Amino acid sequence: MGYRVNDAYATYRDLGAPPQLTKAQVTKIKSENNGAPVETSSVVIGNKGEFRKEFVIRENDVVLITLTPIH
Image (cartoon, rainbow, N blue to C red; front, side, top):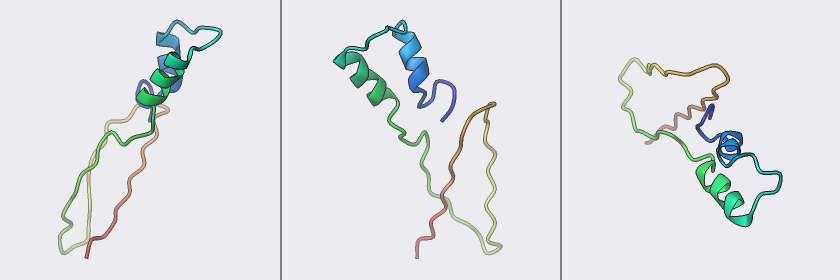
């Protein structure tokens, strides 16, 4: 989540910042900014139990990383 990624305000501005949104505009904002993950992947963690990955993030970006063991 960040600038232009799940960013409802940016979509609203792209629509011209109307004082009153139409139902179609609300639908567009919701569909483009639904909070869906940008990336989902599976990783295999070795015997040391370490996981490393670099992420490119900008100021005010938010990143959630969830590691779930699969047995």
